[in-house]
Amino acid sequence: MSAKARSVKDYLDELEETVGGREQQVKEGLEIYIGLWKKAIEKGIVGEADGIDDALVKIDKAGGLYKAAED
Image 1 (cartoon, rainbow, N blue to C red):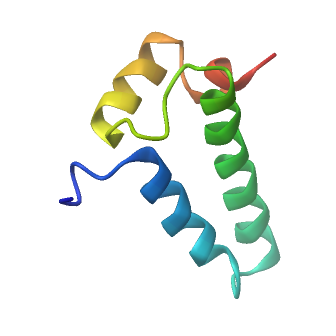
Image 2 (tube, rainbow, N blue to C red):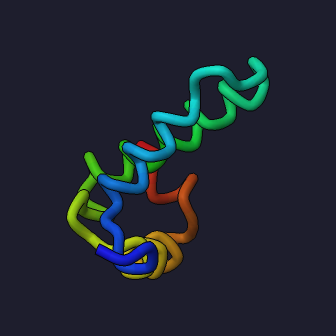
């Protein structure tokens, strides 16, 4: 899978691997960002198998990542 065609799951897995060893503020920011993506997946806005480009279009249509993840 090319970098542009990688899935949401692969993207989140890569981000989670980078959390350790970061400054606390950066670590917290990454954890929040990853959590928002996971909430958007749980709500069915995006799927784990979606390509990043497709997922970003879906999130944009939902009003952004915060809107896509809110209850």
